[in-house]
Image (cartoon, rainbow, N blue to C red; front, side):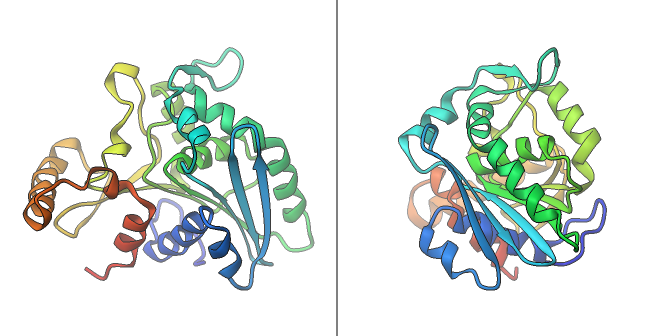
Length: 254
């Protein structure tokens, strides 16, 4: 991992962290990552998994995304609840419950790892549901965070949550988005959810856009849909959200 620079998106770090976010789905891939000590925090109740990778220099916390029926139930519990008692910042109830099921054990493990003679850098990552959990965990973590890199992240909370999160962590948070991934756009207006962090938008013209306004995305949407239909006479839809699609984008040289 490269040393973090405030407000600076590092595509090499993104590709590296994507590897850990993808490995969280697959026990075999977890074990194939070399030179890192591996710890796993699981909840049988919510089927939530966080994987901790540790070296002397870095601690990486990777949350697994949607993999099971219980994860799907988590995803659809979209009622908003307060981030903490009395807060105007509200977040997705399912995401909050999933994090609650592993948070205490995870915080304890990470704080113990970070308490040695050397102070490792802490990175937090995840894809899809895992991206939402990464964002919520970053809020609760009291340690200094080197970077929060999320992939295919759905909206996590309301405008007050966005403002609260950005005041604390926007300078080190990068939300990587495949321009054709519609999951990153729900839930939206009807539920009054908003995105937080800095958006890194990989569009259909092979460009990387930083926090682009919505109207600059429209040509990418149209061109991307045409490309997909022209190539296979169909729209990829959920395939554009898949973890392998994000791996492909981040390893592309275009």
